[in-house]
Image (tube, rainbow, N blue to C red; front, side, top):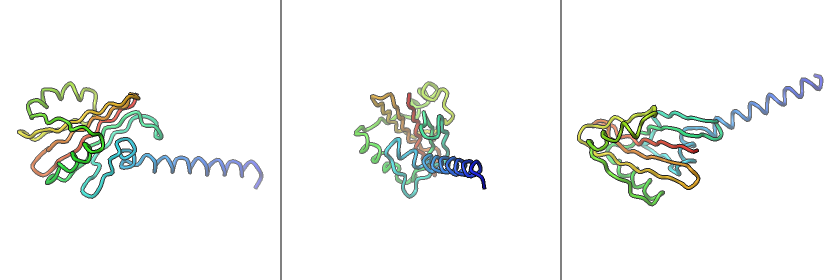
Length: 152
């Protein structure tokens, strides 16, 4: 092998390693843990996630996470302990009144079970980073935590 082929082989290996590291770094659960501090445990599963921006520095994402329907308060307790804020419960009517304004331009739009309350917690940081948490019951068997994260 001549020197040129060896150099190209090394470059190819480095590029492959770079993208492999990016895929691991950008894993859904790792991204959520890195940006929110929430480690998803047993009973929690990322159902959908829409990521925006560069793989190594996401500008925003929208995530839908299934939570145990029999104990959604556990998710609320974890989030409130991390951020030191209690959040707000909205009635079904209040949520739908505000939802068209809140979710304008978002791909994930929560569907709320009629007659249930919705827990929300907006968190704004000084460095223009925002997280909006929303816990909803979509039907008798499924509760979901929605996370809307953005960085400017």
